[in-house]
Length: 148
Length: 152
Image (cartoon, rainbow over all chains, first blue to last red; front, side, top):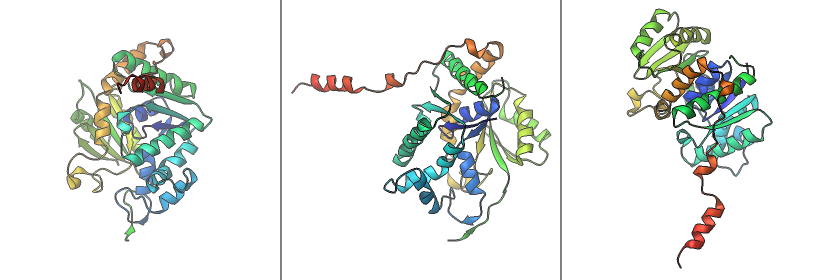
């Protein structure tokens, strides 16, 4: 069972596909759950404390805005931990503020830099594209040792 | 700053999203309650939120998935069900994150169709998806042509 980083990190479809074909998805919920369940200082709503931008320095330089570094403190460890990644390009779902946009760019850059299997797709717009989309994910995950 | 003492430590929370024309979220909820030993289940408009020990949650999900495997989808959630920091009852408006699910629910029928098709067809025989990334973006040469074509 491999750990697959999914992008968009909140994607229901990718999270489901990865679980369905026998692997573990790594997405936002895992990192948020870890913070929500860890005792410390109250920092609602996401329990992101001033410590996170400091941790983010591991992946982004000090002149990079703290919003990007704080987000990288969530995603960075998962990118390092993952064995493979699936990216959906041009996802409207990943749209957000400038902090999200820059984090997304850095995230995709880090995934592409890492020497690991990677699948890049776009959301399907027809049934035929849907079949190609799911078949591509299935082939990718089965090649990584997943369920057939 | 005040101390933060989390509740439900060691549990996992998962969404079960139902996009089916045979099974409704309430059917899935009834089935989930039947096998719900030691998990918390919350029913909502698009499916369920299930919280508990990972083994128990996975067991309940495996049971409800059998009702309509190609039309029931699952994803992780960071917060427990009804958490005041996320629940729309205390915030008003849609819960942050609902819009993502709402967007993907428009695509789920294609995914369900594909899952049903791939039950009877080998994935290796399906051609790779066409990458249309370049088609969406204006390349620099076209932009230069457009700039040059401008009337002074």
